[in-house]
Image (cartoon, rainbow, N blue to C red; front, top):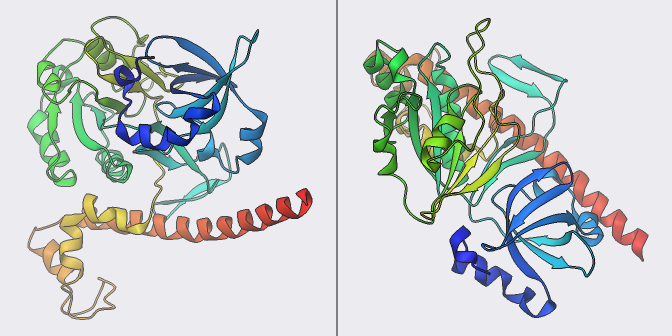
Length: 360
């Protein structure tokens, strides 16, 4: 096994310790196709299934192995598959509220309804490349939400504005992004035309695991191909009818570069639903939060009250009204989400008690 070549380190070694003498092996999840997981130990590739015991323990979607996870597996003689017994604790991960096909709507700018489960997009990542397109599908509010989720992941965010060759007002877009991505590196590139792509390489180091995030058609697969130096991910053109990207990557996949870094290309996300506690906004909205505690009244609603620091900051151009509205929308979304999560935790606790009663 050559685990270090695919990101193994002391963190995972410590958590694997009590499995060592049980005939079990560690491996990293490269991808998933239906119920089959592709796993590597740095030398060999295995195809894995969930063991019955492990599947019985799973309560939520987040408990299933995700791309980038380190799993513990067992080999069986004369079987083409290995069997996953456990997922090692995640050092970091990018997640969102799990979307569903129906039952949701927009109310006051906040997505309501839908599932209350967490969906893991990519696991054990060091850096998140948030990719936006400069070809007519630019959405500053979407980038703003990606920034919140990136900070919540525990990984380092980097913003890439792609397709600079198709934009005549690049500086205006940079200023918009800079106003919502405080202190985050912003790179302007054209992956298709190989413009300024070398600037990205300076942010990537050996043993890094990098996740690429963005909506369909922003160029994630083209950037992945550049980083890998070959045509690995299939590309598709922009739809002429809508001006938006067609899906290229349909499921997340971890790809390994010979120099030692790893890339997780993810599907284009139609919905960027938040997941986390309300305090995750302290980093992504620190410009707004800096004024929240300065209002004359501690229970200020930031509407008609006198001595409102937020209203003064907007008036003085310190923050924009849109920026504050985004903060309120994200805070409200997380607040409502966590009320639902509390209800879900109570339900899961009841189910676990019922299981124990059933077993004994």
